[in-house]
Picture 1 (cartoon, rainbow over the protein chains, first blue to last red):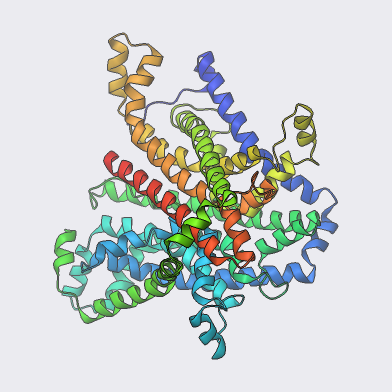
Picture 2 (picture 1 turned 135 degrees about the vertical axis):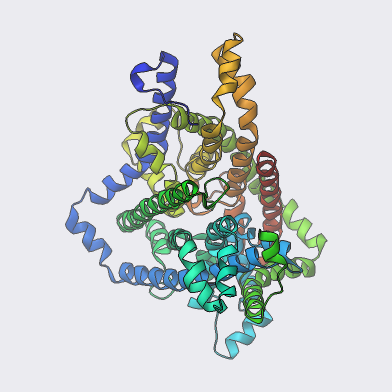
Length: 296
Length: 272
């Protein structure tokens, strides 16, 4: 049972002070900086804002960010679903190791993720040299940047589906296969409909994380303007070359997109929880509400 | 229920699925990690230690650890207070704050850095006022702590809030009936129930803070022996083609963040 919340009018003075202190801290730390960015970006007027974003380099970088995000999201969503199914429905030698390894990207700094790829595929490594000679350059090219994106977002889809799969169990899948449905039909008709909101949640997190990835891409890309410069690298380059306005404008776009994604994630999370409570009433599931784990 | 599912003989489609997943994890994750370890082994412990004990590297590691500790200290207090206020009280703007707590997770880190420069930087009004009081934030070590506070804000809140919401009010009522004051109830009844969640959130925040790069690069100014954190140092070494130097500091950073994640998950499991 959730205790009845006190309203501001019925609080004692120390309680009011605590609420105000939390509000003030939140405004200073989170809202203030966001508002300052917005004010800087919009101060010279909407025309200047649009101009800054329609620079060829800016457009080019947005396009590249979109391309990388699209590829990474597709790959990690498909394999995320597969990995979640394998983790929950199969037991095999190395199962626990696979489970533990999947969380590794949370511990690895993005800069170290980039370093790993440079060590493995860089021009000085034998593997990188060989791949280069057969015409598949990795580091300082698109494939390296996609690999970096795949690495940092690997656990996100898996971790948002696994709790749901564990929760619903495999009874319905077994019924389907007893009735003669093949694995593919069982997945499409039984498993997918139960996990689709979890998949959407995980995929949205991959998009958010991938759009904003900076450290790993900085190391791997070599930051070639117009070829390997993503939107976040563009922001960095504009600041470094003392053109802060371009950086403010591009940052506002990135912040806007991530804000929309955040709202989408909140809605998805509420949806998943509501479904869960509806199920609880129908006595289909036994355990507590499912909440996708949210870690970055 | 799930144990019968797990013990069922796996069909050929299941095997194909399993091995394609393992191959994918191998290519994306294991292969680069192994590359790092092999490179470290071939450089040898003497070389690695020489790189770590270099005073510039040592200062960078020390700075990362201390700024992360300071941030976690502040974040534990403010995060618990935020979770408390969100779980217990109703006030105008609560819905907005509850939705925006996760904002630092979705905003790109480089944008975070730029936002902080826009508000606290030397060219902003607030920055000028603060430096009038002798408080220089951006391009100083306090700027690094500020960036880490922003980036790690959700960890403690999101780990403490559900525990507070599920806390049984009967215990508090019992303590109040027996004459315990509000402060005593907080320290003796509520806080012990929150410890595991607080430590778990703090561990996650610490691990994240050690590796934070994008926001710190914007606010730190990147001065060696002053505001150059370990990730900035690693980047500098990669740029200067000193891969062994980058590698050595990476190993230190990686072990520290793994350790704090393990501590965090131990405590989280103890809670469940």
